[in-house]
Structure formats: C-alpha cells, structure tokens
Amino acid sequence: MLFNLTTQEKKVLIVLSIFAILGLTVSGYRNYIARPQIEVVPTQLKSAEADYQVLFKQRRTVNINIADANELEILPNIGPALAKRIVDYRNAHGRFLFKEDLMKVKGIGHNKFDEIKEYICLE
Image (cartoon, rainbow, N blue to C red):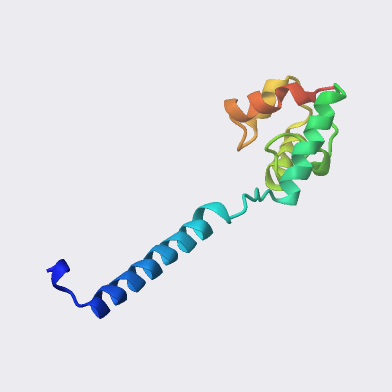
C-alpha cells in the first residue's frame, strides 16, 4: 500500500514525518535538556541548619536548663512548637537533671534525642 502512493501523497507523508520528528525533538529538548536543575530550600531551613553547624564547629552547646525557645530552635529538627514544649515542660517540672530527661517532652523520642544530644548541655 505504501508503494502505491502518488508523488504528491509521498511528499505530504514526508513533510508530515519531518514535522513529527521535529516536534518530538523540540519536546525532548524542553523536557530533558533545557529544564534547569534548581534546588529549592526554604530560607528558614537553611538558616537553622547553618546555626547548628556553627554550634558544632565552635564546639558550643545549648544549655537546655536556661535556653529560651529561640535558642532551642537552633538545635537540629527543633521547631517553634517543640521548643515551646521544652520550655513549658521545664517551667512545669523544674530543671533537667540528665540530658535524657529531655525525652520526657512530648515529641522527643530516641531518634530526635540522638540528633541533638551532642548540641545540648545542662550547665
């Protein structure tokens, strides 16, 4: 059937094939080559990450018995709500006697405690 086409039909078929190939090429270029690789990191996350990296480099720690909520937010993965719960717990129950006592605060389990224990102190 393909070989029984008239010259004009063959020309139309060639033109359509060229447009199809051109369209696929442009589409592929847009989807794979021209798409910039942009890493979106919230400014607040970058800032918090930088804060505890500075603490680590300076070998400084946050005293969980006197730190306010803003200071506690410097710790890895401690946001405003959890920092407030730490302060509220400390106000209700008194000073933390051991670092591990921090796990009595709702939202701080073994994993989170392991992430922050090197950045905290009691005095």
